[in-house]
Length: 267
Image 1: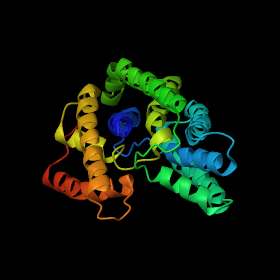
Image 2: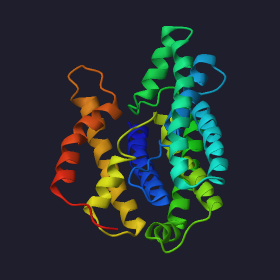
Image 3: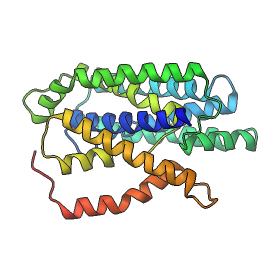
C-alpha cells in the first residue's frame, strides 16, 4: 500500500512536470513526454523483457527508452523544433509497431497477461524489486533536480528572451526522460496527465514562470491520480479498470468545463 501511494505521488509529479517542460522547450501546447516515442519505447522494452526474460520489466523499459531518447538527442542537434515534433510522431509510430509485433508473438498467455497488467498502470508493483525502486528514485531525483535547476533558463526560452542552442535542448530531453522513466518504468505508461494537466495549469494560471506550473501541475496530477487510484481499487464494482483509461474518463468533464469556460491567456 505504501509503495503504491508513493508511486501515485511520484507519477503525479514526474509526468506533468515533464510535460510542461516539453511544452516550454518546444513553445507548443501539444508538447508531451510521449510525443517523441518515449511511451512506445517503454512499452517495447517492457514487452521484450517480459517475453524473453532477459531482465526485469523496469530495466527493459528504461534501456529501450534511453535508446529512443539518445536517437532523439542526436536528431535534436540537427533539426529545428517543428521537424523534431514530426520526427517524434513518426518515430513513435515505428517503435509502437515493433512493440505490437513483440506482444502478438508472446510465447504464452501468462506472459501476455503480465505485460498487460504492467501497461494498465494500476500501481500494483508486481515483481518490482527493491533495486528497481532505488533505481527509479535516483532517476526521479536527477530529473526533478534538473527541472528546478534549469527553470529560469527554460522560462526565458519560452518567453522568447533567449533561444536555447540545440545541444541544450538535447540535454534537456535526456533529463526529462530520466524524470518520466522514473514513473513509467515501474508503473507503466500513464496518459493524460503529461499533456492535459500542463495545459490546464496554463489556462488556470497566466504566469509564464514555469515554477508556478511545476507546483500547479504536480498538485493536479497527484490529485487526479489519487482519485483514480481510489476509484479503481475501491469503487470498480468488480470490473478491472486500468488507471490510465479511468483517469481520462474521469477528467473529461473537467477538461470540457475549463477549455470551454475560460479563454487561454496570451503568452
